[in-house]
Image (cartoon, rainbow, N blue to C red; front, side, top):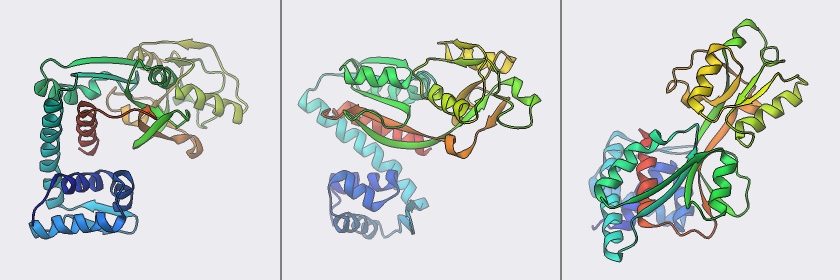
Length: 286
């Protein structure tokens, strides 16, 4: 029984999407064919690799070990494809300032090891700015926080996150709406998804804003909120990264936000882009 690259890609896709049906849709397979591929791999290794659940699947310990190996194999395969077809070694990439370039350093490092002459263009900014740069053709792919908005962009959901309010001044108030009323607001940009959510909260609760200040250095903005210079909003996953002490949960209807990989609708992903995305998918799982 031979395991081929299509089987390996199917296994990895199911593992990352945690769904056989979603993986079948992504790879344009019938769900029955996808199920057969997974069963073929399990029979080959004589191991249960997935635990079936009502709303999807999860990897067993053996499955996690195989996923790690298969990801390495896919990276080598895509590297080979790239070198044989002699595609140009470049990556034009964007991300939110709040996510930060260092989040992607491990992936960049592995790509530079495989392609020493790799040229990377990276831009950071608010979600709206990055989307505009993709649409204008100045960037090819990006990771952004927010919600799908442009019909000419494809949005590939990668993870869920939650928004929180940050600021030292909030500790003096018991109720959520009181901690925002007449507070100074610090934002990286008027186009960021945080600004939109804050505007909605202030409108819904009929609150008055204090002074609005834009601080383009995201790390400085966070530190200023912790000193008590105003309030801002941030993804909860970044609390530990920036050692944020003063933060507060927000009502559920405003809380959820997605991490998306975006590209133009007509964009064909290159081998290097696929490798970069695959490396980041592995980091999201770790």
